[in-house]
Every structure is written in C-alpha cells, then in structure tokens.
Amino acid sequence: MHLGPRLMLSYFLSTLGGKVAGLVVGSSEFVPAVVDKVKKLKGLTSLLHCTSDLYAEQLPETLSPLLEKLLSDSEYTHVVSTPSSLAKSLLPRVAAKLDVPSVSEITSLEHDSSSNSTTFTRPIYAGNAISTVRLPSSVPIKFFTVRATNFDPAPFEESQEIELAKSDRPDLSVAGRVVSGGRPLKNAETFAATLNPLADVLGAALGASRAAVDAGYVDNSLQVGQTGKVVAPELYMAIGISGAIQHLAGMKDSKMIVAVNKDPDAPIFQVADVGLVADLYEAVPQIIEKLKQ
View 1: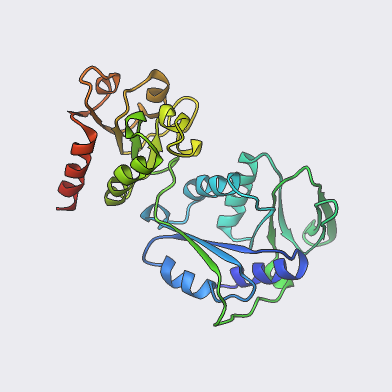
View 2: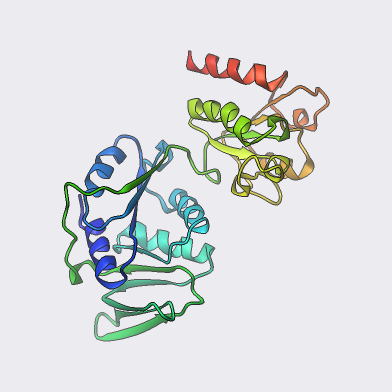
C-alpha cells in the first residue's frame, strides 16, 4: 500500500478535524484487498468502495464522472490526494465540472471553521517562493493535492470500526451497458425489484425515463434524456419506456438498443435494434434466466 491514503488521513485529522471518508475504486481483483488495508487506518470514519471492470485501468476520463456524482450528492467540504499523475488530471477535471478551483502540491493549510475558509501555502518558481492561496466559504468544496514529503502518515489500528459503503454498479455516464426503466414499473420498490437483477447480471448501470423520475421511482441523477444524462453505451435496454423525443435524444447513439414494451406502436421500437412486444413483468425474468445460462 502506498503512502497516499495514510498521509491524507493524518493531515485531515491534524488540521481540519471532523469526519474523514476514504474512496477506493477499481476492479474486483484489487479492491477487496485495498479495502481490507485502508479500513484499518486510525481516524477513518467511513470508506466508500466501488468495484467495476470499467475502473480496472485508472483513467481520469472514467473516474471523473463517478467522483463528480459522488460529490454532487454529498456534503463533503474538502477533497485531497497526493500529487500522482492520475490526481493531477482527475482533481482539476472534477473541480472544473463543479465550478470550483483546485490547488496543487500544498505544503501547509489553515482552516477557519467560523468563516469556512481555507488558506493554503504552496511552492512556486521551482521552490524559490511561497504562494498563499485562500479559498473562501463561497467555494463549497476545496480540491487540493499535498506534497507528500511534508507530513507523516497515519497509523493503522486493527480494532477500528468504520462505516463501509459498497457499490458494484458502474456510473451511468460512462457505463458500457445501461438498463433503463419507465413509468409502467409502478413504484420505486417494483422498479428496483424488477431492474436491479437484470442490471446485476449484465454488469450494467441503471437509468430511467423522465416519467419514472417524476413519479419518484429513482433519483433524478439516473434520468436519461435531453434534460438528464446523454449516454451512448454498447448496450442500452429500454424496459417499459415508450420513447418520448426527449428520452430518445439521450440514448439514440447507443450501439445496440433493446426495447421491451407491450405497446407495439411505442416510438422506442423505431430506434431499437431488437424489439420485444411483451409484458415486462413476464419478459424481464425470462431474459435474466437466459443470461444466467
């Protein structure tokens, strides 16, 4: 295990205080071992880990949508990493998407909790001068990397209990396979019970039509369409989606479109490569069984 997570944790605890969350992302080959190690770091209060073959190769292009989604739906105040080549590309990308600045290779910081401002120092001009950067409360999330040689790592603690949050679901924005559901899925419970098993067997992300989102079946972060996410996966499965123009605008560039709908005149069939006119509650379980064989 490299120094990065231990360094970041130690620095947060000594300077910022409060709760500290870790994030582990990668393939199933590596994530369990890393999680087992990181969860023993003293002072870590929660650990998020996401497993998908999509993240087997650590690329900012695939990791940035995941991190952006995570931060958009949270109350995190600071995001920090060592200045690896990945972090140097990843953090500025996500910061730009969230419309906040990113500070690189800091050597110290002071946080004023009363004003919620953070002041950093960082070397410039090959270390011949020190720059001071202050991020005020108007910057809701402060992104920065830390110069590793300036701080001691956090110790391990075998008996520590932390909150673990796991996700094996690829991020919708970059997933190679997407399973989307529409209004006929009735409610949030039925949506999950019907589509989660299909998405699991395919290793797919979940999506939804605007009608399903407006009905409260899923969070609006899963909406596919002109006013939601625009996706172009290798496989897009539209389950119980009629195919409104605004939805088609968000998925029409998918390589393979499979539609299941009991209405033979549904517009979705006009763009589908494979169409099945059937009751989704009968068809989806059969599809799952076939895929498992």
